[in-house]
Amino acid sequence: MNQQCSKTIYEGRGFSYPCRKKAIVETNGKSYCTIHDPEYIKAKRVKWDAEFDKERAEKKARWELEEARGKATEGLTLHELQQITPDKIRTLIPKEKK
Ligand SMILES: [Zn+2]
Image 1 (cartoon, rainbow, N blue to C red):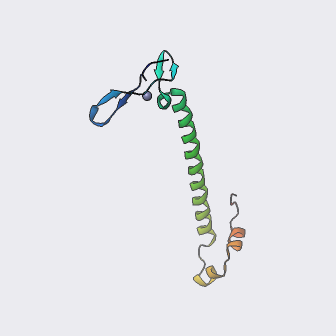
Image 2 (image 1 turned 60 degrees about the vertical axis):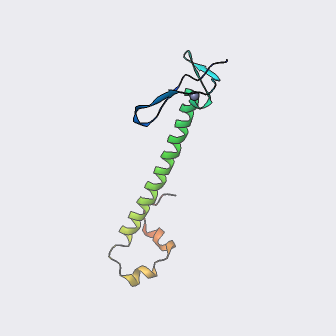
Image 3 (image 1 turned 135 degrees about the horizontal axis):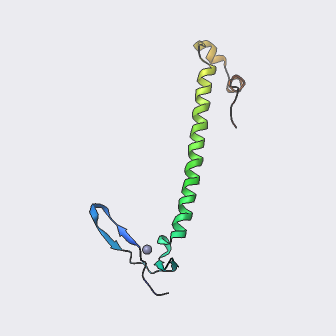
């Protein structure tokens, strides 16, 4: 294959130009370079989505833990709070996720 990538690059302000890279794959009759290969882009997006979901789940779990911690210690005095060790807090929270 000795073609140019058929991808059009869009810049801001309405400018666009064809990708100047050499095509290495052909999909649906169109040639693409490595970074514009639709399969590559799709795989990359799936990877990003997975990472994003993981990050979001971690944030949610952390937030839920904070909230549970807040509820568990609600109404306690500062002195009482100071008596609570992290281990004890864990016992106060009924559904902490690991
Ligand atoms: Zn390209």
